[in-house]
Amino acid sequence: MANRTGAKLKVAVVGACASGKSSLVRALRQAGYEARHVAQEHSYVPYMWQRISQPDVLVYLDVDYQTIKFRRPRLNFKPEHLAEQNRRLAHARQNCHLYLDTRELSLEVVRDQTLSFLREYRASAT
Image (tube, rainbow, N blue to C red; front, side, top):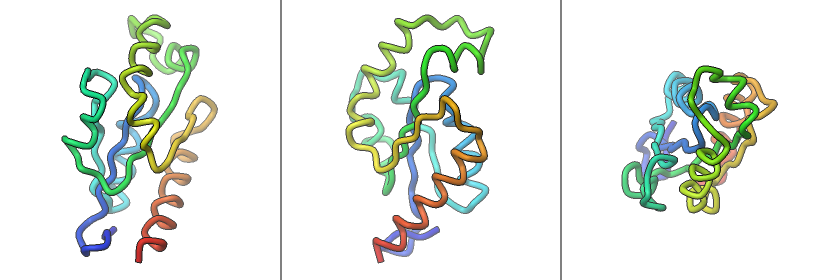
């Protein structure tokens, strides 16, 4: 899926642990996008997502603590870990093109909503 210059549309995906980043990146790559998970939640550099991936589109996946524990019951993760990740993700959240709260969304819904957004984004950019 091309951007304004004809190159593949570059999509960066950020979010807290267990928000669905890896699954979404896999789905976007299968759909032909140049997608990348940026481990922004582990970085002290607020704008790391910009420096590493220089995306055309930034997707932010949000999640709450209860959902993280449900999705990853063996993960040694406490509410304060999520609070710290959210602090580190604040810049990305403020600058994202698409925000999705994944708490009650299946992977298929997250994928479909993202693909729909990207189609609209691409159409409006031409």
